Amino acid sequence: MAEERVRWGVLATGGIAAAFTADLIDLPDAEVVAVASRTEESAKGFAERFGIPRAYGDWESLAADEDVDVVYVATPHSAHRAAAGLCLEAGRNVLCEKAFTLNAREAQELVDLAKERGSFLMEAMWMYCNPLVRQLKALVEDGAIGEVRTVQADFGLSGPFPPTHRLRDPAQGGGALLDLGVYPVSFAHLLLGEPADVTAKAVLSEEGVDLQTGMLLSYGSGALASLHCSLVGGTPTYASVTGSEGRIDIPYGFFHADRFVLHRDGRDPEEYTADASEGTRASLKHEALEVMRCLRAGETESPLVPLEGTLSVMRTLDKVRSEVGVTYPGEI
Image: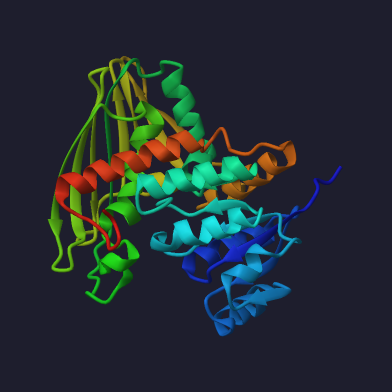
């Protein structure tokens, strides 16, 4: 029996919006019915590219569209509070890209608004919906590597990015941390929760955003998370979690993992791989499927990407920025 179709609206027309829309179109029980941008030209071009019936040159029209079951917010994170808030105010359900907002205050405002309206809200942390990452988490929770001692993860791009690029623009929430560092931080949170203490150092650009940041998170259990993000060097982009009785390594591209290796003391390494039939980087589809599962079940948040987890990640990112001296326009 076919599942009830879920009607999607897409807010923004950039690269991640295109990637997610392309995956939505491949899902038989998803339908993209509308797209919105700040300009009608951009919205119409995106609509023509993907065969979307309605294109809006403003966000308000999409938020007011009663035929939309859920809006995917894919703007730069500096606009997430405004865009997601507009949709929630209008009674829409929302999947919002990460970093969820600029700071924890804005994130809390969105969570409070969603609860007030009784609407579904989820951060688009596709990594958490990846079947292999879910399997890794289950192995750790089942004690496969004993008590977790250390988490390591990094995400760096070689660039170079000119000062005019959005990643260098404070007004757009630029810097390595919110764009790339959110992945290592979220990976550590997935396995260890919110840290007791945060230490960080960064190299800042002339514009005042972080070009690269190193973080050390410490936990009451005695565990440590050593994390790094960069806009000035292409890093291995790997992750590893070490326990008292073994280790799990995820090679390049840990945030869309298609393979990891479990090393248990005294045993041969065990390799876990993704279903080859799904193709590479299938996490976006799993993210969409989780949203649609929640909507059909009447759930207002996902157990895979819980809102309190999103808030705790934002609190950690706030602490890192406080440590390294990065503030954005309009922040107190």
